[in-house]
Image 1: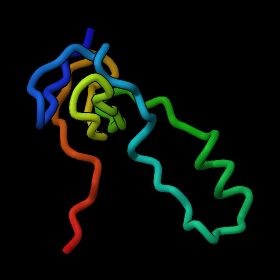
Image 2 (image 1 turned 120 degrees about the horizontal axis):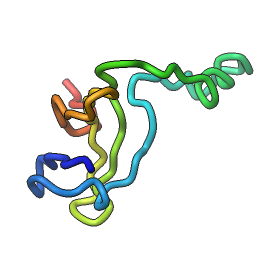
Image 3 (image 1 turned 180 degrees about the horizontal axis):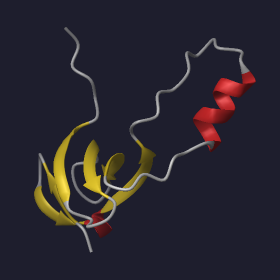
Image 4 (image 1 turned 90 degrees about the horizontal axis):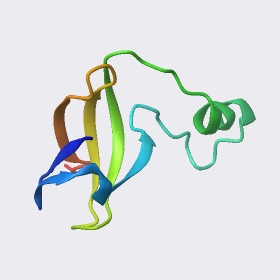
Length: 88
């Protein structure tokens, strides 16, 4: 069982969250017509051993999307941050 430290709501059980996928994958540009780029974005994922960034949404709480840095071996969570990017 994972315990995720939500920046808004505090520590919660992972059952309150929804997994949103790999946060390390960068989405191609909207007007990118390269089918290989979209194929890699949608289907191709590595299976890392160690630290990994993942999207999680706190669906039973504040509904924020978070980036959780989790060790895939020990399931320990190193950091949690908001997924929205700060604009300069």
